[in-house]
Amino acid sequence: MKHRIACLIMTGLLIVGCNGQPAKTAELLSPTDFAQKIKQSPDAQVLDVRTPEEFDGQHLDNALNLDWYEQDAFSKKTANLDKSKPVFVYCMAGSRSHKAALKLSEMGFEKVYDMKGGIVKWNAEGLSGDAATAKIYGICPTEYSDMLASADKILVDFYAPWCEPCKKMAPYLTQMEKDSSKVKIVRLNADEHKTMMKELEISELPTLILYDKGTQTWKHSGYISEEDLKKQLK
Image 1 (tube, rainbow, N blue to C red):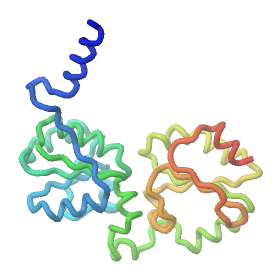
Image 2: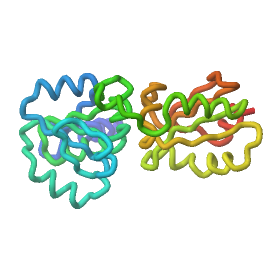
Image 3: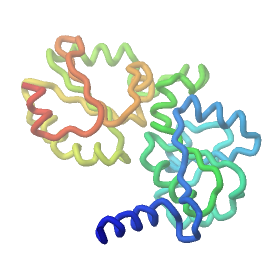
């Protein structure tokens, strides 16, 4: 009985903050809902928490770039924002914005919205606009097709240097790229190959696509162990 009471008390502490008020959390929105919510909020504060290089490549209208990796600068700049006005946070795929959104909620921002899937998902849902998609970024569809014709079996790995699962997989994928004779492995940086990311409707990183004589036979998004990947390539 005492143990049960203690568990109930601990649960209550997790739900209620130290000031006696319910703990604030950020609201996760799909890119479409995120865009609609911004339109409905004339006082919206839009924060892009990626690096300046990522920001320069593409960003939402009227977004303020606050690099999540630069914690001191992030804290100082967010302290100057209006906590009573809604703040909209996004990154490339959702990991950094999730952490930043929780941080902003803890800092006392009343309304915090986090875009699910980040710019990757935003582009996959066709929200980048014609002007942004007209330009070719990285390999084009014709070059991609030519690449697929260069070998019978090809595994294409769409990754990003900031993606944590990608970082875990990088060592064995790089080694497999050198050692494999049966399957040609091609690694494409998603930040540099946005055109094919959109063309293939890739909304999560990493994404692995296996082709056999130009035909897609397998696709996987998210982390996969070296052992499980090798089973797919047999």
